[in-house]
Image (tube, rainbow, N blue to C red; front, side, top):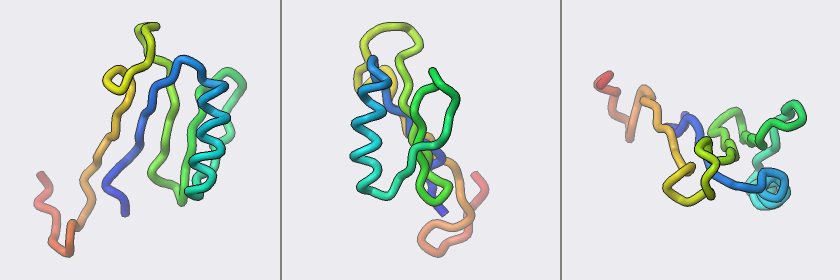
Length: 86
């Protein structure tokens, strides 16, 4: 199981980014998730991790700081050791 729940990337042009990530992530085996028109692109591979592409909420230009996030979640074992639950 992956330790990463999802990754969020920022873009000011979601249509253009969607075309780019369709190609790049497609090579890596990711598929675009079906979403209603006007919703930002999202991708998955084997159920996880999911990659979301969003425009910054504050309306400012997307930067590596404003919208790039990886959300880590605990999982039962790391390198064969039981999780401490912390």
